[in-house]
Every structure is written in structure tokens, then in C-alpha cells.
Image 1 (spheres, rainbow over the protein chains, first blue to last red):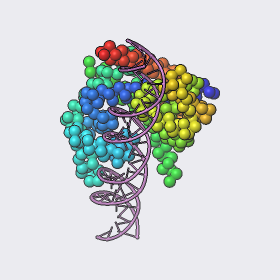
Image 2: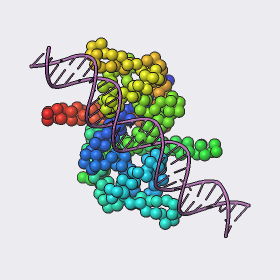
Image 3: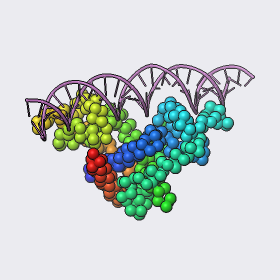
Image 4: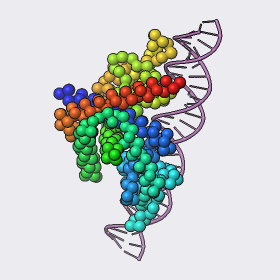
Length: 157
Length: 157
DNA sequence: CGGAATGCTGGAGGAAGTCAACTATTGAGA
DNA sequence: TCTCAATAGTTGACTTCCTCCAGCATTCCG
């Protein structure tokens, strides 16, 4: 039936539109107020402030090549936001730890995202709750699909 | 109160996560099945199949510089998906019209987005409805904010 | 008619992405 | 133990995308 297909396609378009708008909005704010490129901001947001994260894990979270992450970390380190440390358990891996300054920067980013998100602020608290639940469900489905695909390609080899 | 700020920040992160996942998913599918770069696909999706669209309007819809759009249109035209036509009303503007092939390509893209969207397909039809309504509300708020900002910067001058 | 404004294009420069090759380290088996 | 495959991170060449500035054609307004 064409109607369900069209509904899903339209919904996909809507998700992309809203998120693209927000991404652009934050990008401007982060660049103007914090001097951060959007990729740098995204990298920092993916890190765990309380535990060291291997470079490779960050690359996989960002969905890009590890060789791509190296210059990001270079700049983050240069800005004093993260530190590279050699993992004592496996001296091949370098883990990324967020510095005190990095944590302060994360706090400021959360301030911006939490106080200046026009599309989300237009929703009532209960609407935000339902949106959060729906997105959580969609997200777990995405992760499950990803794990399934991964298992399949491994099985093929 | 910190709780609302954190909720909004988390929600923003969720929106970005899900949409980034979907964008990557479609990117792979479009590239593998249709031979389209994601920016080309996005450009084509923004065009109106039934009415010519000026280059400048496409640039504004994509949120990037008009000079950036030129090479995209070059490739779309080379692929036979759109045609550049001079607007008879104002010979400065070149309008983009989607060819028959372009329409077929759009149909195939909608097929992919409508039948292969794991995160959205995990939702029940009624959940999709509510998601659509919430996103529509957020989207209109974003557009209103944009118009307001635009009016303000104009008033400053 | 003359000058300001607008729309598209071209070029320089920067940021970001992929891919292949390289070094260092680890782990498993002969 | 020694060797060899596998893994983590980095580097390099190369491509794509984006922005800013300059240029050309066209339109609009005084």
C-alpha cells in the first residue's frame, strides 16, 4: 500500500529537516560563543567526561574513519579540552580523557542546547516526554538493526 | 531549574543521533543502489517535481552558499536528472526543472526511504502519527524563529 | 540614462572524508 | 621461544564540500 510508504518517507524527511535545522543552529552558536567547529563539538559531546575513551571507539561513535579522528583530537588537545593517554592494559591504544576545561566546555554546550532550542522549546513538557520515548524506541531499533547487520556480514566471511 | 535544561539538551542529542543514523543509512543505500552522493540526493529531494525552482531558492533550502549549488546542479544536469532553464520573467535567474528521469529517481528514493527506515518502522502507525505531529509543531516553531531573526537583523540595518 | 542591487558562476582556501601504507604492540600457534 | 597474523594509531595523497570574494549579466529605481 502506497500510503504507508509515503508516510514513512515524509516522516524521514521531517526528521532530517528538523535535525538539520537544529544542527545548523547549534553550529552557529558553538562557533560564535565557544569558538568550536561543529565536528569538534560533536567529538567532545561523544566523549565520556568520567571515563577514558579509546580513539577507535570515538571514531566508531562518530561513524567515520579513525584516521579522520586524529586531527580532531589534535585540535582538542591543543585547545586543552582533552588529553591523550596510553592505556596501561594495551599500549597500542591511546585513550582520550576530558580535562577540567573540557568538562566546563561541555557544561556550556549543554547550557546552549538546553536553553536555546526553539523547535524543542515550542513543545509542552508532556510532548517532550512522548517525543523522547518515541526517539528512544527508534534509536534502540536502529542499534538492533546495526548489530544484526554486523552479525550478518561476519557470518558471510 | 537544571532538570528542564538537561532534558532539552538530552532531547536535542537524541534528535541528532537518530537523524544522523538515518542520514548515514540512506547515504549508503542511495550511493549503492542509485549512484547518488548524499548532497546530490538532498538537492534533488528539495526540488519541486512540478514547478521550476530558482538556483538561489535551492541554495537557501539547502542552507548553503549559491556558489556551492552550481557544481551540484552541474552534476545533476550531467546525469540528466534536472535541466537549467532561463526564467522568462527575469533573465538573470536560472530555474531548475526536474526531468522525467529525475522524477523516476525521486520515486526510487521515496521507495527506499519508505521501505527501509528501521528506526521509524519500529514504531506503530499511531506512534508515527504522533511523531509526525510533534515534528510538524517543532518545524513550524523553527520557521517562525527564523522569520523573526530575519526581521530583527533587517530592522537593525 | 546611470548607478545600485540582484542572480549565477569561477577561483582560492580551508575543513573533512576515504583509502592505502607504515609503525608499534599484542596474541596465538609451530 | 620465535614467527606471523591481527590490531591501534598515525601519516600521506586525493577527493568532496563549503565559504568568501570577484566578475559578469541583468534588472530596478531615481
